[in-house]
Amino acid sequence: MRLVGRPGFTVIESIRFSTTTLLDVSANNQPHSADQARSTLADVAKKAGVSGSTASIAFSGVGSISQSTRDRVLKAAEELGYFGPDPRARSLRQGRSGIVGVILEDRVLYSFRDPMTLAALDGISQELSPGGGMLLLTSDGEGEPSIQNAVFDAAIFMGCSVHLARSIDIMRRRNVPMVAIEGQPFDGVLSVALDNFEASRTIAQLVYDLGHRRVATITLPLGIRRELQPVTEEVVRDATTAVSIDRLLGAREVFSDLGGYAASNSSSDDGFDAALRLLDVAVHERPTAIIAQSDLLAVGALRAAESLGLRVPHDLTVVGFDGARIEGMSEYDLTTMVQPATEKGRAAGRAVTQMLEGDECNDVAFTCVLHVGTTSAPPRRC
Image (cartoon, rainbow, N blue to C red; front, side, top):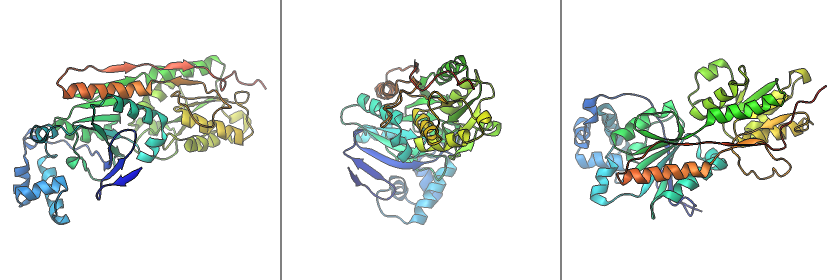
């Protein structure tokens, strides 16, 4: 793999998903008036006291201007509500870029370690036009917005939380077709949904029917704060991540007071650390079952149980969510909810392709399938 690019842009070549660019993006939710929405690049240049060509350079990043001038232009654009040239207007002059922007809510490092994210990206790539590619943008809700100079024809959100509202507003003003995979509803954003609530209720009911009553959960990140933390009512109240919220509420349909830990990312390391905190306690306080919101978190819980000398499922039941193939798990057949990750990506890629052709598209919903493996059993009777 070879890395090329210029400051602020890293292009990864020879990757399965075609040409991919990585950018950092934020999303501060600040509304703008209708008058501001009609602002042009010429208005920005006038307000900043620069020529039109200088203002254009500030947005394109191609050409030499001072940082202070660039900052002045971008500040003027922010005040006027101008978010960059309409990519479809540009396509009339230069032809369509062939690029679809994919916005990830987690760091690229964690996203590329998540088999569900990779499967969805692969699905998207299968449906893009020949010669097209994906522009990967990360968003953690921090930093200054930089999507003004990102060139793409359509946007796909991998998850769609409230802190992305500003990014959505910017793209809506730029007339960019948008699709959200497992996101919160936004006007003008087509939904590719998964039955996270019902699937989590189903696997929690399995745990209940086995006889478990002392149960804990390890959730995916619940909000912008990315650190391992207890699932308190305050944390749940402030949660913004749709997938995590739906999976928690689904499980709480069965275990109404279900608590545990929220992970900083979907990783076996976080699952291990969270499970150690749950399990390394007195026997009468220890949960007899752990409901993990991803298979990677479940793997961490299995390893934590092993480190404490606990046998699965004799001493502890562990269930996951995803149906991922994970290396080094041959000794376990994880009980989990199997989701169609690749199909979700294909549906999103197909939708943006159709919208760019001017076709009507409807929301799509997928369902999970319960897989009962060897990591779940009735609790041991003492």
